[in-house]
Length: 488
Ligand code: BG6
Image (tube, rainbow, N blue to C red; front, side, top):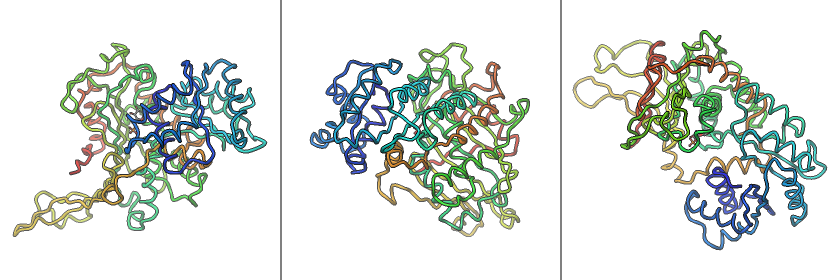
């Protein structure tokens, strides 16, 4: 209850869902943490957080009170059985009684506590694989494990106390409108899907860049690094949605089946080969958005000789019929020049260079860019004739802008995910085999540098697009990183 995620994301999301009439009625929220708070103290803290982090309009006193009277606090340490006894008695005295049998536990705890909390909830009769009445579900925040072995071990602990359909593993990227729009774009538009394969596509670039540094998450980040923090989950999920086969239906299992099938096709490199396909980087001091910023190694609570990566780039191949031979370049990093997430589908050039001899510059190949955030939208790049007597071409764009088309309201990822978990819809959550396959991929890529100190070409000054090693990675296969679109 006292964590950053709860204040910044979860409670604002629940409040906005309530405002929109999207929470089931009746409902009650109980927050658990160690601080000696009363219900009133916690409500005050949440209201302040909502004013800071919620979407406009700011809550009126009346609407806040309607929500806040359903919010309660339960003080206790998560490793103390007495906490669960108190929680059980709060649940058992909830009114009306149906509240006692429809329970969603949201584990926004330290990752090392996920297994223990589920075990203790079970021991206190608060969580069963097949509850006699109503339903019981458990949402697990990231990181779900640290590598394949730990993710498997956690899955085994969970499986002892709950069944797979009760487990909702979060990847908040899947809750983003534009990430969901990838499937709509692909499978409701015949014109693009026919080109969505190795015959028409030259390569694909997926970029998730952030201007932020490690912030106050040093403890977590020193254990994680960019590969585990971003690529293992968010980037691989985006890759799966962009490249999977059409699902047989929109049912959760049908979509998750296709994603798992796709992830299984990601080529695994033997450890000695991984270095040729994946590079890491770490930021040194530099300037981001006009502000001087410190090197990663100088950030508070970071080891002065840390080799943890704040940037990772990989070249992946999908060994299946549709994508054979097409390189997929994935990159993500902190302290890059802009905060932007996009997927660029680069089509092959025209088969015959009719205009090339006459045009200057040579017409560029087509590209579709899916801008996931910010300024969500989709762009198609093609060549147009520059008006005039000379034969000159210039790339131009057709651009669909989400906000211009639909207005500025886009629900926050956590609103969508919380609503789905309450409704029992697991489509946007990760299945056991999916998360384990993604970890197996990440473990294989990490072999590229395990135990090695950073090389000089793996450092990049904050505020540039990554280390020289990343440019060498992509140029080795004849390509170059495209700077994400600058939209007007
Ligand atoms: C989180 C990572 O999962 O995603 C963070 O742990 C990262 O390091 C964040 O900053 C990015 O999410 P978003 O929604 O801001 O793109």
